[in-house]
Amino acid sequence: MNKEDKMMNKEDKAILYFRNKFNCSQSVFTVFGTEYGLSENDCLKLGCSFGAGMGRQQLTCGAVTGALMALGLKYGKAVGDSEDKKLETYARTKEFFAEFSRIHSSTSCRILLDGLDINDEEDYQKILNRDLFSTNCEKYVRDAVRIIENMT
Image (cartoon, rainbow, N blue to C red; front, side):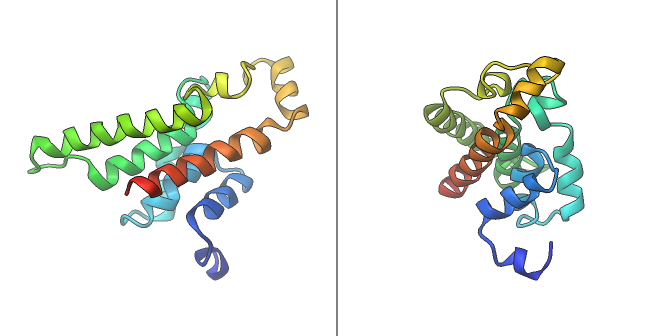
């Protein structure tokens, strides 16, 4: 990112990543991971396989998995840490899921894309025609970032 990008808030940075062909998970995780000491490239690589509901399987939304990786990086249990760190991370994970689900009624990528199958050619065309990546996914990225910011 350039100097102007560093002046942006996290939501806008995440959207900038997303609009530059990074997936939801990469976009959310990177704005937090770089703050917690990882390089931009390491964050982008780490988040890559979680996009489109974990490798285009449309399971858990990538914005959600990116947010959970950020929570783990900030609060997670490492070598020598007490079990309390793991329990705190689980509690924060549960809190995140509850808030995201309250806003969007689901954390499932397929459900969040109106039940359309990203791997089916016809459904994928519907996703593109309805501009769901911009209208829906950008909302999920923004909300995931906002929720994490409010929790940390």
